[in-house]
Image 1: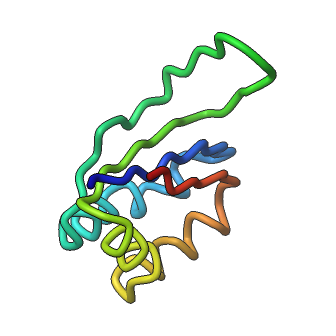
Image 2 (image 1 turned 30 degrees about the vertical axis):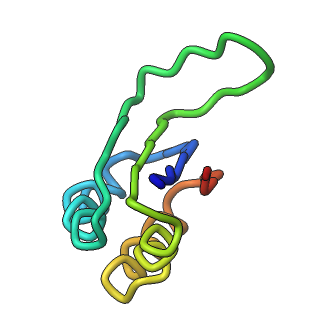
Length: 93
């Protein structure tokens, strides 16, 4: 059954994440994932939920989603994102 990774991201300096945005898609695809949503057009409809960007990834299963997130290919990009943005990331099954 497909699972989703939902990320709410605040990016103070978008140019600092140019490499992340260029290189991350190949790592997602390598683990059988795909982008469903990548957008900075976010409109809160309820609650106090604001962020600069929302990303939704789909993976075939939780095992592959976790393998991607902890993979050696993604790790340096994850470190780069963590140094230059704040995020809430959820695995939704």
